[in-house]
Image (cartoon, rainbow, N blue to C red):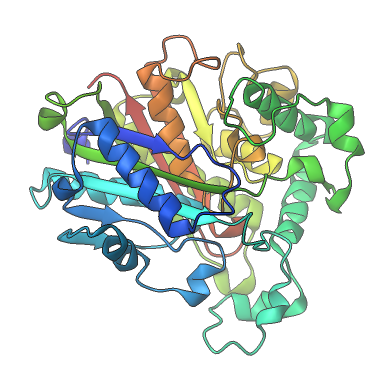
Length: 401
């Protein structure tokens, strides 16, 4: 894998500015994002010979197949390489890996990774849907058939994750709330963020409890959104419009349910660690080299567990580090610099927007919330709602090869 280090670069990136797009379809949101990213790269749709995407909303996976083919039809794209593997928010790191390998192998020249969803406008239930509604669905996958019929929800799982972290490591409510406070501080600087008013720890803890001990303000926003990135070889990237952002390292890992006896916290941390170690090794860097981190944050506990699994904090130390301002603007480790899923946008599968924000930061294109001269960015996506079967993907990006 080290032979792939720096051979491919991100040359175009675009995030749709709308957070509520009631008059647009998810297909149009995605199409506008693809056109925006291609324009950013100085390329045309006819240059696209590989396309990667997933179903457009958390519920669409049950209803829509061939999401990539449908989007290609919508935009009249004619790629020779297509992938729509869905492992939730980690899908886009997986796509990045596949694109790098295909470009280096000479199978393709230009890859587009995109996503679009109108989750807010379509009033899709995210996190609070009772999966017991799906009882009797013949395609209910394992391990869902053992857990979901009993009324579980994503937010219910999250409450248990946080409870366990409190028991194991003494995580306090104030430390968890500090994640949301830091996210709002970044969002206040981002004109496109959905929630920009700064908040306090007391406000977070005074917000309604959704699934004890998780409060409403410790949950992500639910928005519409769209985005896309464009990749090509490092050699070709040097001839294009924008400064390239090189892919130095990539890692993937998955955890299974162990027949219904999964240890969610341990599994979460272990697959994060495994994917991070792969990415660090391929890039030839260590956690201490990271200048800015984009960490999937559908909930505050995801940021805490993510930082520890990534080796950016030792086990049990992320909470105190965050409470002390460690991830705040101007802090020693900028995290989720656009406001993250907690405050900027979260249309269902946010992993792509982590990559886009990392590109912005490395290019110096984040006015108002730009980290000072970052060289190395870490991007971490996770999926499948943090329980049972789940995936993790880590990417290391840099301005330099």
